Length: 292
Image (cartoon, rainbow, N blue to C red):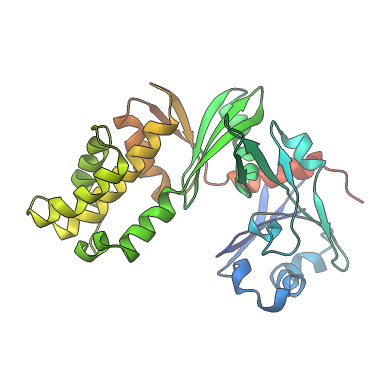
């Protein structure tokens, strides 16, 4: 089968054996926003054409390709959900010579009844479940970080934190960014930001402190971005993580490393899972689906 993780900025495809072993892969800077005039069928054929020519007929896709801006809007499936429920809610798309389907997103309401959604992360979670076990807390860092509860081997609920996007917005479009210079990660400044997130006053007050520390000469321009990152991630972790929790992290090393540091600093225990969770999840969901 062929698994495709198709997001906003990138395209990743995997040719997999029945047991989920990756036999070949393709990557391209071809996010859904780069596909002109909605020509997703042509774009997909251009990427996986050789595998189709070799006889592959089952194609399962996840990510923003199933969003309102993608090929078709796959439905949001309510939590709790596991591989079986997700496989039973796949959305089909018209494509010549292959059965192409899209993994649904998930939806969950918080205690106030406000909905939260994910699209793409559910597949990573399904792929990581064998390593996580039947119960656990999972964090998927990113532009919109997800904190997910696994109960009885299923995705029971989750919360989204816009930490990555807020960092980019503050750095690029507010007065805070004017005092930030391009520089490598400053671990000491990051740790200072983490520590500040535990102080009274709240995040909005703490954010202005980034500017005030710079003006007073106590925070270098080259360290400001790292301090801001630590401050924001610290507030996220303290809001999302129960005391002394074990937290499974799924993502690239660049994303999981600062979260592992923050979780440790806040009293938790991070466990980094494989970056190949999306491919594994596509294989598991495909194995639970009924193909024509």
